[in-house]
Length: 376
Ligand SMILES: Nc1ccn([C@@H]2O[C@H](COP(=O)(O)OP(=O)(O)OP(=O)(O)O)[C@@H](O)[C@H]2O)c(=O)n1
Ligand SMILES: C[C@](O)(CO)[C@H](O)COP(=O)(O)O
Image 1: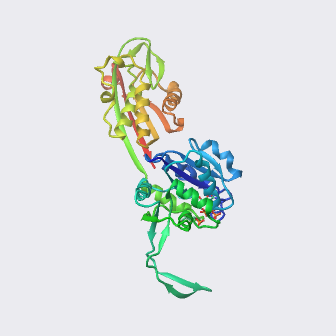
Image 2 (image 1 turned 120 degrees about the vertical axis):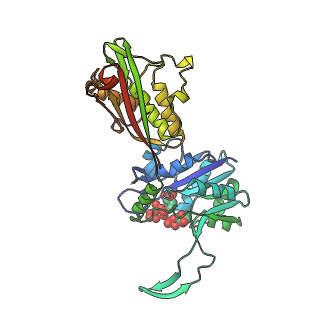
């Protein structure tokens, strides 16, 4: 099934305050809109993504990589209609209509909505009301409302595309959500289980709630790498991607970059994905003399394919000679370039072993590295 996501992001977020529409405010280090888009971009069953923006926000479009951008209207339903029309030229089978203000939507909720479409033209997540419901006036309770059969509606609300497009075209406007539009057109909408965490950022206090929930669901992994290479005759050592002049070089099947190997193993370790020798066996001649950036790129791309980003890494080189200090800045910059991360996430430092052991006797260089990976 060809499934598109339609993310409405043309509201002004007046109730949230803060001077900037809530979708552009920061939440756990990224904009609200970036989290929401990522949830759909990472979902294997979602193809295209349409984002509906306010005319004043078109400058943000460039940063929403890979998304089709449409211009929104004065109300939520006008914005949804604009997004549907943007898809109508090349219609998907189904569309998932989602508030940008719900950045914590889980893959499981998205799956349940998609699965619900197998049995009905519409499916939407909701939570049964569990608190007692009152009516009140002037701060005084005036009655109790029957809560049986009442639900709190969430998004994404999913529909067969042709049906919801026609329903919006025929609707007079003023609907609270797309389920109301669908029902007005006589379409059945299945209720699937929502998620307490799928909150809509509405008031100022919701930012702190959303950040707490994000912290709870973060997956943080740490890996440790260790490597040793012996010296042989030569004129430079390749260390963390930098050629450091020396009267010896490091011996190995590849370029013997002991620092980069330790870091690569730390990333594989954090992912529980074995080690460098498992991915690039020394028995294979194609890795003979290979530049070690191939290994590091492979490890970081493997991490990204599993949804992880590098939070930070720290490499220690253990040797008497060559002196690392003058080259540490260049090494950090090179590792950061290879991994496409900010240099302030990469540390390279060195120590001697006080002339003890094989490093102290200058027979070779050892390296240790730790890497922390985070999946939000
Ligand atoms: N003209 C509008 C109004 C709302 N929305 C979107 O509809 C969703 C749900 O609306 P709400 O939480 O009410 O957002 P805002 O309209 O931005 O908030 P407020 O009512 O506080 O201004 C949000 O993703 C919002 O960006 C939209 O695309 N176009
Ligand atoms: C669509 C919706 O998210 C369902 O809960 C909600 O109705 C939209 O937000 P609003 O605050 O009602 O504008």
